[in-house]
Each structure stands twice: as C-alpha cells, then as structure tokens.
Length: 138
Image (tube, rainbow, N blue to C red; front, side, top):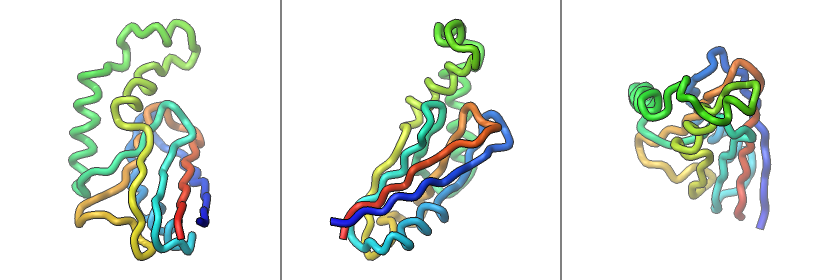
C-alpha cells in the first residue's frame, strides 16, 4: 500500500469564509499516482471544517445562515472567557460542519457524483491555515 501527503495553505480574506477546494483535492489525488484507495482531507485547525455538498454555492450561504442561528458569534460561551481569541463560535461551528472528510478514489479520481463539491469553511480566518490531504491506496 502506498500513501501520499500534501499540505495546502490558505489565507482567507474574511474571518468566516467558504472556499471551493475541489480542484486542489483533485490535483493532489492525480499527482499522488494512486488509482484505487481513499483520500482524507483534514484541516489542522479546530476552528475550520471541510464538507462535501452540492456545487451550487448558494448551499454554502444557506449553511452559514443555519450556523448563525444555531451558534451565534456572541453566545456567552465559557471558552470565550478562558481564551483571548474569543472564537468559541468557530470551534462549535466546526463540530457541526464535520471537521474532515474521507472518500473513495477510483481510477485516480475522487469517486464523486455529478454535483459533489469539496468546501473548506473557515470560522476564525484572516491568517494562514493548513489542510492536510492524505491519499492511501495502490
């Protein structure tokens, strides 16, 4: 069994931002030379997440709207009293968004349906963040 690891570095413009990273993920898988296996996309930060959804970017805005209702920025969180960054909402939104993803690789490509899109969602941005992509297989 072989493996390939690549770290992507992002610097978001906004504190909360959604980035379509599908092309980056596909590129890493292609360059891995692995044709059959699995891929893991794993942010190295607990205030961000990766998820797969429809290619219509409106769905990401809808998800952000849902998260704003469920986890308001100023929710009186204990973490905000113990951490000077005051980013508890980002950590909680990450948990709800599904921190990382894993999916099959077939014929050297993600085994996605027509509209599957990989999104990176940052909840405490405006600084460099890293995402590990690990491809394992033959």
